[in-house]
Length: 230
Image 1 (cartoon, rainbow, N blue to C red):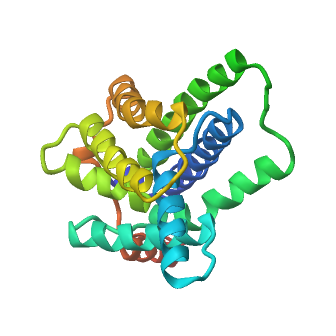
Image 2 (tube, rainbow, N blue to C red):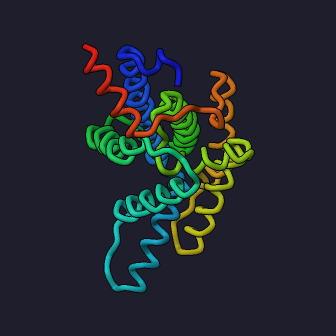
Image 3 (cartoon, rainbow, N blue to C red):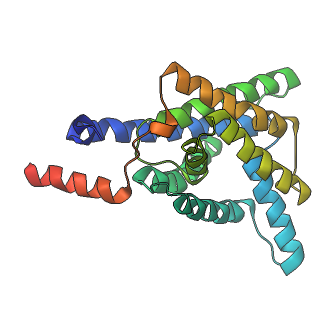
């Protein structure tokens, strides 16, 4: 990690990038939801598992509950694949849902009725969402659980677009088989998100496989050193 990134100014810049990236990504997610053209592959997966578990146990499981459970399971898988758990990893789990609730609860995202405008909203949402993912990953403070899995595959030689698309195709199929709701937006997401991420990475010359993500422990140690010197 370069010294400039671990200076006080460096950390302020990176924390701003992390927060802004997650805020942008959350807004993009809300745009895709408001298009009413289909939920994301991971949401199809969570919804499908919720249906299956409810049928098996007789209990009711919400989409939010399964989403959190899946997040923790994927996080464990990312650790097994030797991805670092950073501040951004925990922040992603804790804050993205809050941003989504804020945008939705205050009607800050357009909700057009015409099919053509809904389709435009969907595509614009994917573009914004993918840019937000790039922006927070560029802070190199750790990736969210699902993006950590993508990063792990990327570091093993799989192009980022293929890694992203493959993961989302797998969870999409499993969720669909389990009874998750699928729309045209879901299918588009499977194929487009990986390429959009690859586009943003290329534009800003960001190589996910070479990203020097900082573990949460290293971040805490470095910040303590900065305050000790002050």
